[in-house]
Image (cartoon, rainbow, N blue to C red; front, side, top):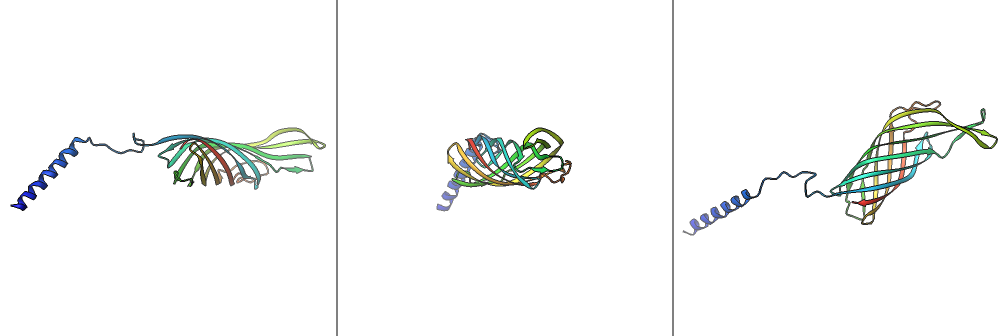
Length: 207
């Protein structure tokens, strides 16, 4: 009799659970659902890069959308210039490179809630580079003009360490390597823009 009673009680409990579950509507979980966290930030970057195998300065900005504290994506733009130019004795002029590039970035973030964590940004897009020539009148620059110019596409994977300084402020220390399509400029290699970059980025926003 006790076994029958326990069996009947189990049937009642299971039936009650099934009935309760049927009252809850079926819902598919999504990446961008109502329980997903969203944020965004503005980032300002400065740093070092290699252009034509020489030292160059680089600066830029990015706008990012942060999803679930673990993935960011958005738009980025950078500009660069050689800080070491080479002077031609024959025609008394300097040659140097300037340009810019930008596009989209995608950034997986690991351990965003911790004070120090890592991210793996990948940037891709297009850009333009100019070979500039400056003529001198003695020691003073006299005239500068663009001698050659070309466009390129690029991809730039990297790794970064992020420091959560304040709730809405982070500092990112990043290293990346820029790969471009062949760049055709007079006197220069087609891989003139391939090179390492190191940047410091100040991020302001909701993470």
